[in-house]
Structures are given as structure tokens and as C-alpha cells.
Length: 370
Image (tube, rainbow, N blue to C red):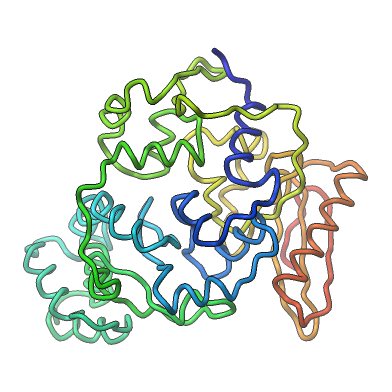
């Protein structure tokens, strides 16, 4: 069966809870989406606000404090907000790939080439110990242990080699403190679980992002062995083809969304996983506007209009004013423009409750900078 791009679009949005806000809790949403992108502090809060009903950001802050939520390096080597069970069972899949990175010639201009990886890891584990430690303190230890190497590169190497997570206060609501790092097992009081099958991780990916190709799965996870894991699932999966004839996999009980279902305007955080978790992003990023994805930096974020990325926005908090500037990527109808304006004001009411809201919809492809 061939699936149209629009079926893939609406199915992705439905599984991401972007067609209708969900009553799932923040913890349940993190589990369903296999984590929320959290490289910076605000995006997971925006992700949850855009997907859930009456989201209270204090829930995430409390979760980080009581350790029922954690910020850890997982898929694609980036920080994700996840529950402890996922931290313990996904990290063993990710860690071997992360550990290869620092000793390649391209890493920090070969800064670690020539060192014994096992010795570097042992020293890093001893340096970090069982208590949280700031990057600055770890860098100082690195400088003392490796005076002939770049201390920053050694620190980065340890953060790749060791299963670590970021402890609060970083990641709490309105708190963008510098990272304090801890090894995963002491912080959570439990060992890593290497028995969790990759195939089960693929099942969960498909439940939140499918239907998808094996290359989509690999883009999301940056893991090897995807094809073997898919084969293991056997009749738990069904296959489709997309408009280009590529094979897509989905759960046998996975429901496809109605392609004619209306898609409300949604404002996502920067690097939202809904946009970044497929090799072929045309199900959510139309090909003519693919290039602006390269501008997803410095807190520039996507706006979904009729289900597709059709604009970018950035917030500029100023004295007494929350200034949100919007750059459409195509002409909008009057109705679309009004809906974007309303959703932007709702987002400002969430993000900057004490500031006067100011929404500016600019010309198509206008520079977001004031």
C-alpha cells in the first residue's frame, strides 16, 4: 500500500499529539515520545506546552529535583529529557557509539589521538566519582592530569565516554545554569540495563514517529544494527511504500491518520524531535523550505501551519516586553495569519507571563533579527 505525504504528515502529527493536545502527564509524554530534545532548557517546556492540556512547568522542575526526570545524552548524541527507566535502558545502546567519537582524528583537531581510551575513561570515572561536579571543576582536573593536552577536549571526551547526566538546577523552569554533571548510576541509584532490546526501542520509535524507513530510524537514533532489529520484529510490523517507492515500516496495529484532518497551528521549540527524527523530513518540512532548517540555531524555532513547517519565530525578551518575531516561509492566508497570531500570543502568555506581549509577523523570509 502506498502512503501519500499528507497521510504521513497527519499520522506523524497525531502520534506526536500535535493535532490535539493530550491529557498525558509530562512523564507519560516523555515516555511516549522516547524523550524530549533538551539541549537547551526552554525547548522541552515548549514541547510539552504544545502537546498537552494545561501544562504546568513546575512539574518538570519538580521531576528533575526528585529524580523522576533526568537530562541525559542519548539519541544523536544530544541531551534528552527522559524518565529514569529510559535513561538506564537506552544509554547502553547509545554509549558504545558515543565512546568512538573522541579518538577520531576529526575530534577537536585530533586532540586525543595517541592516548589510551581505557586509561582516559578510568581517569574520568575517578575524577567524577559519585557526586555531581561542574564542568569547570572537571576541566581543572583534566588540566592537571593531561597538562600537554587541551583540557576542554579531555572534558568532552569524558562526557562522551562516561554515562553521565545533567543535574538540576539546569533544566528547571527559567533556569539555564551551567551544567553540573553526574554519572548516571550514582544519581539514579540503579545500574544501567543492557538487556533492553533494540527492537523494543524501534517499536516505541514507530509508535511516536512512524511509519518510517530504516534510514529514518537510524537518523533518529544514530545507532547501527537497525535492519537486524527490524527483522527481529517479524509480524509485529507491516510495510508500506511512500510516494518515492521507499519501504516504510509500521506497527501492525498502528493506525494511520485521516489525511483531511485539520491541523492546528503549532509553535515548536528549537530542535524539536518531530522535525529532526527522519532522514526524509518532507512529511513535515516541505522541500521548497528545507533550507531554513539550517537556521534552527540561536533559539530560532519552527511554526507548523496546516501541519508543515511554514514559518520561523524567535523570542526577544526586552525591558517589560516579550517581543516575538515571526518570519513566514510562504505567503499565509488571512485565516492562517490570524491563527498564528493567536497561538503566538498564547505561547507568550505561557513563556513570559510578567511581560507585555508583542507579536510581529514579518514579510516572507524576512530576517528575524530586530
